[in-house]
Length: 259
Image 1 (cartoon, one colour):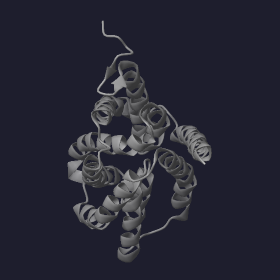
Image 2 (cartoon, rainbow, N blue to C red; image 1 turned 90 degrees about the vertical axis):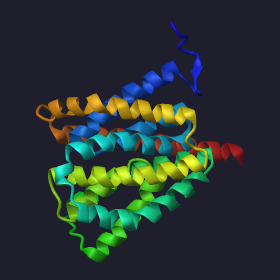
Image 3 (cartoon, rainbow, N blue to C red; image 1 turned 135 degrees about the vertical axis):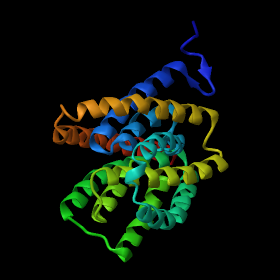
Image 4 (cartoon, rainbow, N blue to C red; image 1 turned 45 degrees about the vertical axis):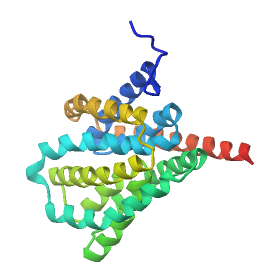
């Protein structure tokens, strides 16, 4: 029997098991509400593999996660929106990824935590505003989303809100979101690979998270018929906001100790 404390490509078997467990739960939550995977995973990945590797790992894992959704819902993809949003978001995504790769550990921790805390009220505002985006406003929104998705985790709710504000609904939202996120995931993972953040340990974590998401999707489908989404929404928002606050505290504490 292998030693659970024996490091394998930079991580231990116990760490992989812990990430797989949390990744499976995050995949189920994301499947139920349409978002949440990128919000939950930083809470376990930051203390496990460090803040610098967290966004690259989630970005690489999203390639696998969204590839399956893209295939399943391929007939519902709105290619005009995919092309418009992706072309505008692409350069900003690269810029955001490069900026993130230059951050030190404490600054990366603080950024992730702050974004997690901000995305909870931002999601509620976008949902209540009933905003409808036209060509110009959609372009600005796409640029902002590109910058966010390149350098942060958990910004998927922003894209979902943009697509709904552009008039999409139902499976078209899921399919179009998956396609855009898949393409941008490839782009930012390329940046992270070139800057050295995608180590063998990071790829191992990404593969574990991506593969565990497959059964999580089927479980989520079963749960959607039995769990009130509103209750789940409140639970995930509370956990994300609290976890984000803890990450901000941790990052600022490390910065304070360095001064």
